[in-house]
Amino acid sequence: MITGKNYIGDVISASGGKTYKTFNPELNEENNTVFTEATQEEINNAVSLASQAFKEYRSISGKQKATFLNTIADEILALDNELIETYCSETGLPEGRAKGERGRTVFQLRSFAELVAEGSWVEATIDTAIPTREPLPKSDIRKLSIPLGPVVVFGASNFPLAYSTAGGDTAAALASGCPVIVKSHPMHAGTGELVASAIIKAAEKTNMPKGVFSNLNSSGIEVGQQLVSHPKVKAVGFTGSIRGGRALLDLAAKREEPIPVFAEMGSVNPVIILPKALQNRSESLANTYANSITLGAGQFCTNPGLILGIKSEELTNFTNELASNIVEISPSSMLHPNIVAAYESNKEKALAQSGLIVVGNYEDEVQSNYATQIVTTVEGKTFLENTTLHQEVFGPFSMVVQCESAAQLEKIISQLEGQLTGTVISDENELPEYKPTIDALQNRVGRIIFNGVPTGVEVCPSMVHGGPYPASTDSRFTAVGIDSIKRWVRPFSYQDWPNELLPDELKNENPLQISRSVNGNFTKSNIE
Image (cartoon, rainbow, N blue to C red; front, top):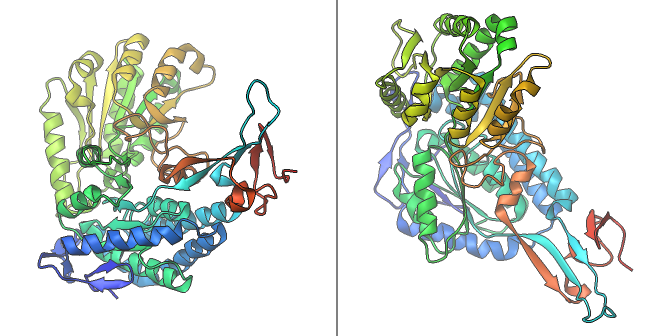
């Protein structure tokens, strides 16, 4: 049942006077539930509880955390149709998308449960003492990863489940041993509260410390600002716009004790189509990319907003085919009127730039909050000279850049901002000719795709969902997959510490039977 209140640990609270409602973009009307924004006192209570919970939670065993994470997954599934119906009513997205995202969320939780139950993720490293070493004895030094402390997670507008309340950031932080305070996204606060109730139930069932999780409502930026500024908060996770992520990064840096902000932000996800591929399959590529650009009304951080090729008759044909295909696809609802307004504003800003030509534009009448897709094209020289054309237009918008040569293509790639993904469409034996371009692309992205589309982010250990700024605030980390746990920990060493007082991960007898690096060799063996 949705109450519209905040979860301060296991206490439901609504002491403030500022309220709001979510919005159904399909029906173009507000939903019924009234949500109460968290007050400064409620924020302080949630953070204090999390800080207190950290003292216990940081030392809870991997198997106990695994049980907690698996129980969260079970409780989310137990919400059944209420969760799916609420999700759809707050997003305008179809039931299939809701169920798919729920499945992904559950899979992420179970993946982290498996990771921490096994235990080797802490990267235990042991260099034993050499007391007889000359000219100085060598100390016994042992290292592992330890959790940072209370983490604030900002819910994402475009993924109400997989990147929000119990999404990847939260799952990774809880797996690492960090309590989590979620700043719920106002566009899907009901979905967020239902998932929060599932997490609280799981915490109670598995005897987790009070305050290991809280969920705070917020209709604006004030609650988020207060959370990031709170001295007991030790890290932040964010998925959203460059403007929002950068504001949080700057705020965290100005604190008396600066803290890391792991933000996944904007990306145009450049796609390079090489000449032979254009010659041999431009029609099928145009169809594939028309569907990718319009998927989910273009509301994916990996939407292909930029397509680059070397000027030719084949590139012109591809561009015309793409334009023709894209206008045949029925538009779909965006998540909220505010997102529609931002899309229209950013689209008009791009269209106002000199040299940009519209080649395909869906012009039929659509219902409120539906996005009309558009394909544009521009000369490579114009694109290089005008960085406004480099910026993301969040929605079903894409631009084809006609490069004069391979050298200009490489130059354009080199001058792009950091991106989440880059894609290369190539036929056999074509890649070696464009090695400088591929090298330039690698320097600008976190993931490179061959003969595919960037939309779709597999949840697996090898996935990198991040990239050079502004794709993310720290290109060394991923926001997807089990390696994302590394954002919420820091390395810590024990020197000459008594064996019986060491964490189990570092004891001579290796009671957890995890894989460890001992004097440079990976082993599960005991240290004699």
